[in-house]
Structure formats: structure tokens, C-alpha cells
Amino acid sequence: MRAAAVFATIICLVSVAFAVDQSCAPELAKYCKGVKQGGGKIIACLKKHKEDLSDLCRARVNTVSQYMACVDDATMFCPDMQPNIPDLIACLRMHATDLSMGCRAELQPMH
Image (cartoon, rainbow, N blue to C red; front, side, top):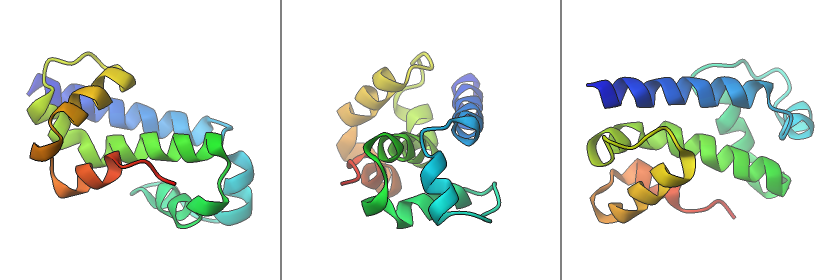
């Protein structure tokens, strides 16, 4: 249960950090102006324009998407992980064949 709370907190923090982060500011202004925050709407908007995103923004969207899609898998397969993005992603990749379809799809890099 503790792991689930930790990962849920990470999701919230990553989402808030993304909202104030400037790595996607130009793309947000150009492609997602007027999209309201919440429910993954901003990430979904940016993903619709993934071919048009800067490398920095694409990487940021990819990270947030992975966390959103993999929180349950992380709780199940990596319960003792400390909140550390690279280590958590590495742990999830070690369990790739056991992951949910949604998580597995998000762990594929956006091109």
C-alpha cells in the first residue's frame, strides 16, 4: 500500500512539474492553447502533435506518459524502488513481458 501511495504522489508531482516546466511552452502555446489541465488532456494534446515537438518536449511528454500509464505496474513489479525516474523505468523494462498493455506501449519511445 505504501508503494502505491508513493507512486501516486510521484504522478502528481510529475504532472505539476510538467505544468510549470518550460520545456514544452512553445508547443503548448501553438498546439494546445485553451486545453484545460486535468485528466491527462494536455499530454494527450501534445501526443497528437508528437511529430512537431522539440526533442526536449518529446522527451518530457514521454516521461510523463510513462508514469501515468505505468503507476499500477510500478507498484506491482517495483514496490521497493525509491522515487527515481531512470531506476524505475529500468525496473519496469526488466519486467517488460509482464507489464500491462498500456504500460508496455508507453515504454516504447515516441519517435
